[in-house]
Image 1 (cartoon, rainbow, N blue to C red):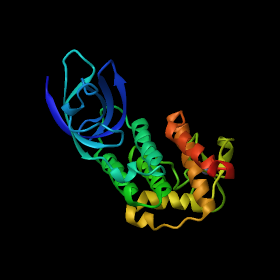
Image 2: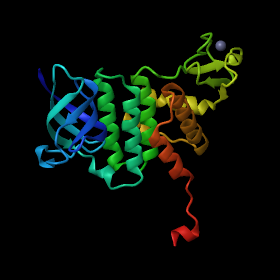
Image 3: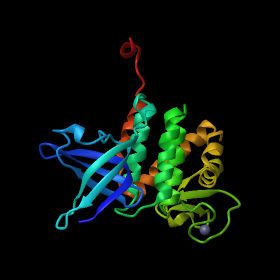
Length: 258
Ligand SMILES: [Zn+2]
């Protein structure tokens, strides 16, 4: 039985038996895993953190020899991202960020760059007025860092460079030239500006990207393409994306407002 200490972002948590919880973490040194907090619901003061979703903590944990589960013996809060928790616009975006992270990374494979990107996005989200843009930046960058990056430099099928119209294939994971477009009958048209925006976000740092202007058409298409790309590769729609879609589609009537 060896004891370890690491930094851990809480991706999800659920009740376990009468008094305990299990939390799923993305940690700096051990990647994604689940840990048991024995008795925390009966004695919350046993831990110096309430293990909230998208909180960042330092944990001490160990694995029992004959068990698949890690036991967390200590949990100290580092950052609760309080600037997000007071905002009904920001909470669903932070929930999307940790749900996407949990879905995209394999178990027990650490990646410091992905953890730092996630913490940077949550930090920016606390103060930024543009929560949607943070969501877009996170999606493009986490796809690139986890090896799911869409192929946008040349035709994904024949390698030709582009000089005219192109189509985007979710199935093949990138752009098709018009000669190869028939290889995926479901490939969709895409604006050059949308492709340029994805490449710009992949290649630039946060402060530059936050200043990037986007016309509403490109912004809308970028959102649709990224959501469909994620859905295709994760083979499911994220629950937090459904919540965001419901919020976007909800237009209150005068009766509901007054
Ligand atoms: Zn081609």
